[in-house]
Image (tube, rainbow, N blue to C red):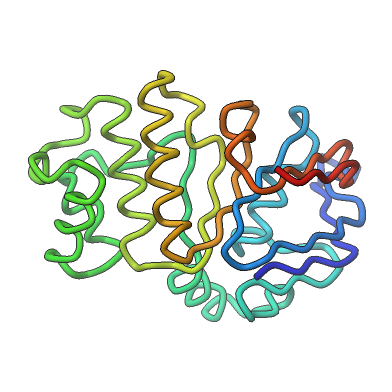
Length: 216
């Protein structure tokens, strides 16, 4: 599903290049649940952004779901993200002027599929609710429905339970695992031991390098 080889990424700060990823090698099998761990600034979220085609690598090779991502043209990257990747972030990033169903419909273009996905995440009775009328956990479930509605083979989640209470976070994890058991691959950035405990495998980054891998 994911193959990264000698992956580098730096950010320019004035005249200085700040290295964030320093030669990352990574293999993620299809259908697996992998937790990506490490201290703040270790490169976890940057690696997720490169895998999802949100940012370009400086150098290296990166194949995701059969697509060589490094060097893809902008339109090809857009199609790659739209068809292969589901993104789940700590902040739901819902559009406040759209209802729950309309926020999900953006990703699918199909109101019936959007409604069915909201039903699947337990929000079938909140289709017409505005984001500011939903709890934090409900907003996160709308974001999850939006990420999953086009049935992507790869789910990339960055601290998906970080802003949730323990019970709501567990429910979001249950939903992610259901999707995984239906055939999707999960790669989750987390500081939460409860999330890591559910993974098949944990990978730890430090200073932009993979320093430890462990089976779950």
